[in-house]
Structures are given as C-alpha cells and as structure tokens.
Image (cartoon, rainbow, N blue to C red):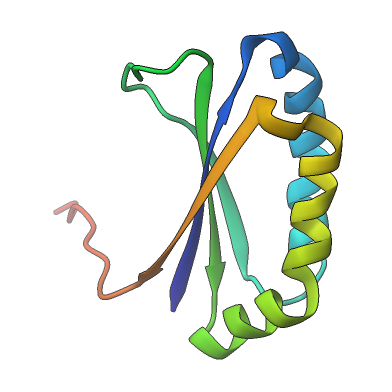
Length: 107
C-alpha cells in the first residue's frame, strides 16, 4: 500500500474557514475511489513559520492507484484550494510505501 501524505501550513487569518473547507475536501478526494481511507491530524511540533500545520494521509491500495489519482484528479482538486486560499495555505506532498504494521499485543 502507498500513503500519500499532504502536509499543510495554514495562516491564522484563514484557519477557521480552511478547517471547514478541508473537512469537505477530504471526502471529495476519497470519492475518486482511488484511496481506501484518510487520516487528518494536527502537527504538534512548533514550526518556525507562523500558522498551524496539519497532515492528511490518504491510503492507496497501490502505486498505480496513486498514479491514477495524479493523472485524473490531482490538478483539479489541488487548484480548488489554491484558488480559494492562495499563498495563505502552503502544501507539500510525500509518497510513502507501507512496509509493515506493528501492534501492541494484549496477553
């Protein structure tokens, strides 16, 4: 599986509006049918830049599914946020390959 991680820094001036928007945006990305689930988290480490930082991790079944997302949907979906928030929302994206998962055993 592939994790498509989008890390976003949001200026304080748009934060509340952005938070409402992103909670509608994530289901739109999932509606492409190319991801299994998404996790939305707030980054707790203090950043040198102002604003709040969040991470969204979309889980894709395969590299091919992620490539299909990029080819068919990414430009349009990313343009929506850029058009609405401009440079008050900074994003960078990382692709991660899921190797293994470990859980605490409860005996």
